[in-house]
Each structure stands twice: as C-alpha cells, then as structure tokens.
Image 1: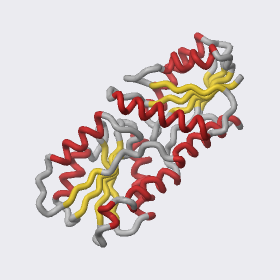
Image 2: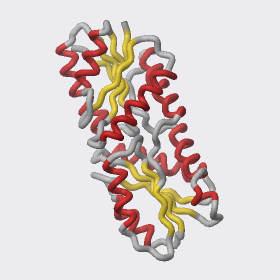
Image 3: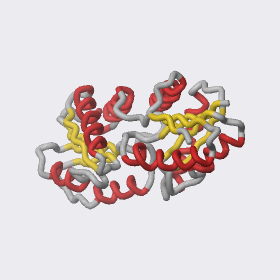
Length: 255
C-alpha cells in the first residue's frame, strides 16, 4: 500500500502549527490520492517526522512518498529531512521511501504573489510606482537567494508599476532591515512588504515590529499577510505527488 507523508517546517507559535495542519488537510482533500495520507513537522511542532512515518507504516504502507511542504530548496530539504529519512529507512527496511521536491520556483507561486500585490489597497489606490520588498526566511544555501531572486524578477514582469527587491530574515543578504533602510532612502513613496512565508509565526511578528520602528513622514509602508492556503499551492503539491507516482522523485531512499 502507498502513502503520502507531508512534512511542514514547524513553529513555536501554536497558531502557525494549526494553520499548517489545516493547510495540509485541505491539500489531502483535493489531491485525489487514494492511499494513506499523514502530516508531520520537521521541528518545533508535533507530530514529528518519525511519528507521521510510523502512522503510515502502522496503517499498512510499504511505499511512502515524502512531500516537503517548503517554499524553497535549502538545507532543510537537502540535508535535514533526508537525514531523518535515512534513519527511518534503516528502522523500516521493508518500506520504500520516495522523496519529492519542495515547491521551488513555480509559475503558480509567481501568480499568487502577483495577485496579492494587485489586490492590496495600496496598489489599487495609487497610480505611482511601488517598491515591493519580497521577504524570504533566508538560508546560507546560495540556491535560496538565487531562487527567490528569480521569483522576484518574474513578479516584477507580471505586475505594472512595481519594482521588486528580495531580502531575507536570516543568514542571507540583504537583510530585511537593510532592505527597509534602502527603501527609506529611495524615491519611492509607497513600500509594500510581501512575506514569502506560508504561515504566521515569530517571523511575521518580528517583521511587524521592525516596520513599526520606522518613523517615516513621507513614505507609506504596508505589510501584506503571509501566503496561507491557496488552491494553486495545493495544485503544486499535487504535482509533486504525481511526479513521484511516475518515478520522478527527488531522491529514492532505501535501507
């Protein structure tokens, strides 16, 4: 029997974990997969990967398709999750593990952010150019900066009257604080901050505090909501499941 195990990042903020569970359950309902489906978290939340995996096995799974519910491909996807799966492959040698791709650079993600920009009151109520700051979680992995930079460039091409700059909350440059300083000294009067985050959490609260520290009299700063559930994202995760069903998995892990 086959199973799909979704792995979310996890958060110390209970609301974020609850949002992730709700998000994955909606994806489960819409992906048309007929086998076992479970969810888990890499860190900070329950159930852990090991528990979610065990639940699949106890329900009779002999092939488990792993879906990392991560926006970009970084150390979590390349190292942290595979390390856990390697240990599980030894513990459950009779179970075949197929590891899928994160969401990554995808045209639907570009469309989601483009629509979010167009639907803000800031964009609709002014005809002036707007500076959009696209904020990623950040990583020391250079692929993260490269991929979010691509997404920023594609968004800029899809929406009129905007310039998009990417920045990061941790471990990459420019930092969010540096991006705000650049915005403050720019000629733009309207600055829209887009958190490239799936759920709420400590990072969202930190961004709000940082923006509130700016005492600008001639600029308008608006913090947009995090991405949250979107049918288009559910469609991407379904793509990732379908890829593995036809043998196009990111990696095959066996004991």
